Image 1 (cartoon, rainbow, N blue to C red):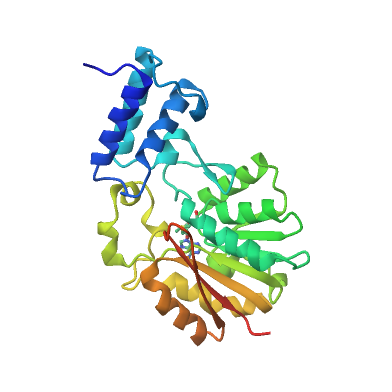
Image 2 (spheres, rainbow, N blue to C red):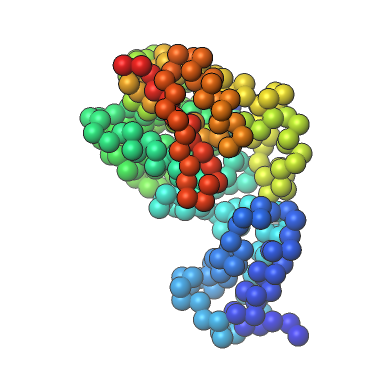
Length: 290
Ligand SMILES: C[S@@+](CC[C@H](N)C(=O)[O-])C[C@H]1O[C@@H](n2cnc3c(N)ncnc32)[C@H](O)[C@@H]1O
């Protein structure tokens, strides 16, 4: 029999999402189903009543969202925004969707900024700017710059900043550090970077929710080792950082040793790596010598 109540619809959605081969296994499918139901019923998730009968149009809308999700459509695109570090950021199709795993990069950046007066922060490959926006919002005295090659994403970053009334962040379009004003040379306290790092050959192994919904240039520089842009981020860091300034790079676990060696070769002091509780991401940390 066709499920009509909230609880039964959620059970069905959870089963469908668990069976999907198009999405990452580590998503919490129950909670995604609840969020979708809440958005359809226009209530808070905590107010969902499992025994409530959902009207036909609501059921159809809910099941179509679940089908889109099971087909691999990134969850934030279904509801139009992502909550990142406590801030609701708009997302749009055809752009990189910010990952909750990047919140670790924000946390590490904030830690390094503690005690620094009117610090300057640069977020390279900022995309729609989640990292830059969160740091700027958390440290109102900071001057934050975000740069990215993609005009449309930078535009969305600016519009997110306006909507959240964050006025200490500036977004520039350009190739890595190329978009920064020369006056920032040697003045930057922290550089953050979640740059593309997937090797060309591994692109096809990514789940559909990534491969089919996000432009390739946001995931990979399409070189054999996928580290061309990482080398640019590391190679250019010393020029922009002040002595004692930090370079923080988000990457996958398997790249940790290699990137730490790259940092040292570039004359930066290796300061290890940080991981989050879920062990989803890693942030490699290096400092410009004092
Ligand atoms: C993995 S995404 C991360 C985006 C953002 N930092 C985030 O976490 O949502 C990588 C970003 O690198 C940008 N990118 C690719 N090539 C670039 C280049 N040559 N210079 C600057 N940004 C570049 C892409 O446009 C994309 O936004």
